[in-house]
Length: 378
Image (cartoon, rainbow, N blue to C red; front, side, top):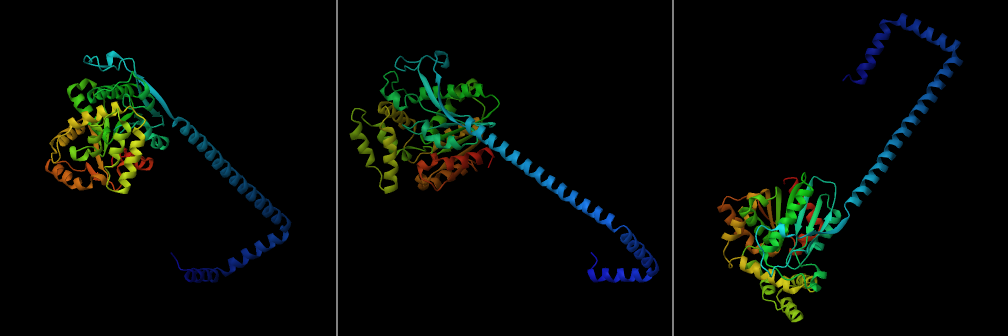
């Protein structure tokens, strides 16, 4: 770039070399302006007014475009909010849903399996499975803000209103897995072009382990799964402090049994969480919850053993393109052992520890962030 002083010098030199020509041109311009001064002013005024008018039109056009865009965006957001509305629905349970004959005690035919659905416009369908004695409503805050199409399924007989319905008698873990498998396949038939992600919280992870075993034995029933997220899965009996107490619970004495479980925590935060949990399950059919907990206890091996956990994890990884396992601070003492054993088996980039409490895994902000990251492949 030419410096300004150099430029001035060159202009002066040019004028000196062409002094005569510059003088003539200057005189002609001066004469023209003098003769046609009114016309020149009119031209300048016309140009200025039209430039201003043109600029005004441009500003108005830009303003209109932005206004329409903002209005359209608002309509789109409102439509998305309406489509995101979480609704309660159910699957009817039919005899043909089962490959094998059911025992007479498993009276589920003709009943319903309830679920919540949030139908956001998304290529992803996220199915959520709740913890012991809980239900789909634990995921409702997340579903209200989720960018994905979400479905949270309540286990058979785990709704509060079903606690007063004698038709919803307790069933075992294997039958729960059958019902959930049928529900997931039903959803995939409804939305065949959506990518399926399964999320399990606490014993919801155990149910996913059981589903992977079911699909191994019946590959024709296996849905196409893009990703799986396990939040605080059980490892062995050492992680089943509450479940072990619930497994031995006497449903005929609910108050005494729940008070006994409330004495387990040794810290204030744990006590608050347990009391909140007991409040949630106190309105449920405790016979149903106790039966499920007893099956879960038998499903796992004693403290210090990890073989079953890793075998079951490998089955999950075999049916999913991407698997992540997150533990809360509740599992901190066991986390390093789990990671060390995973590395011995060549398993990496699967486990992580989140510095949150167990029940914070169900919070909307956590699920929105972690599920979003999972679906982005991070």
